[in-house]
Image: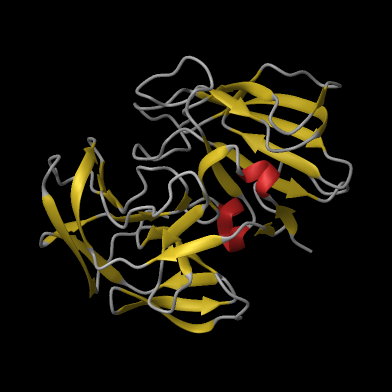
Length: 294
């Protein structure tokens, strides 16, 4: 049975994604990445530094774990285990200031957000959350319960065009589709049938189609008029595609749900530079050799 996350938890965060990661915990939406609002203490490059807790309960254990070595990341990550009464919550990417035996509530500061070697360089700092049954091994990478997001998500139509409003070494963010009412609810880029698409398209092998209605999906999912995958429930296996931006092949699209004013399509493009103010047209084309990162 799925563990449900409601507005009391998700309203602390400007963005979330169930599928936008290559790690096994995110398969079938069994983990969620939560991106905190700004203004949570001293930060670097505009990013919040303090992680608000997404769960209430008793801290069972904190553990330092070795992360993959990457030049843009810290050497160590951290695992927090919290007994919520029904489940054991696993929290990653936070250097804890809480201790075993301590009781916490939703919104309490857990510690400093860590930019770990599990991150791709275009990924912002975030809290990783998953849940285990009380009798399950809490240390294994797999074995978490499915998650349900119990908040409305509005699907935004997008024609594949936009102007670059933010640019980094590995990514660019467009000004469209724009949030119609920033801060007042979560939105995501809509597939052609209205479902919100979530995940790394197509640089990760799969993603999700989050329902904005009660329909059960089992069949093709399309975006920008192109079939991008096949849905089984909300899980989507991506088809082999190339993502092109102004005719240049890029790594892919980073798809998520957000409520911030700066919501817009995010291009993953470590090998292609886009300048602020540049107009971009995104296209999807079938490929015999798609970029796959995991």
